[in-house]
Image (cartoon, rainbow, N blue to C red; front, side, top):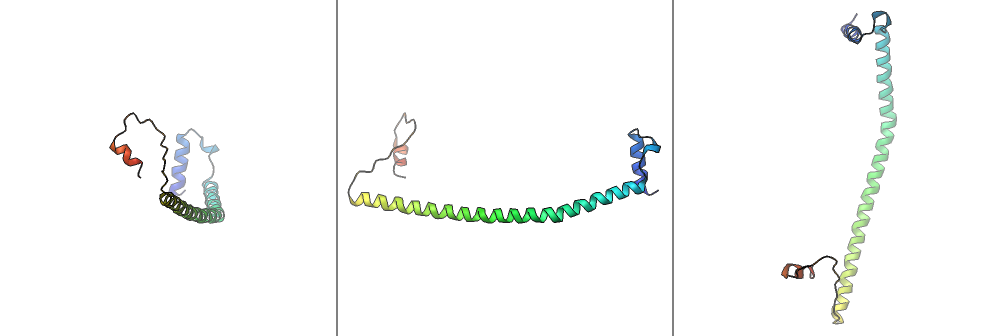
Length: 114
């Protein structure tokens, strides 16, 4: 018997499995080989598909982030144009701020101008 078979036989004996009910070392080696081959096939077949899907999702995410950045730029530009129009018309700009302001001090006044 090889050393791995001896270790397996010893382990199974310690677990209370009698020697006559223990599997043959060749059968254990075959089961381990089949498990290894099945795992490798699964990794290469399904893992490759999973990596392709993940890559496609990352590309879509990058496109979405770029679109968000473009939309934010457009929104900022529109807000600047709108504020400029109001300044040209000398109209008052009113700002609504939600919150509980129990004290209105210089720091909170600065928030209105940000």
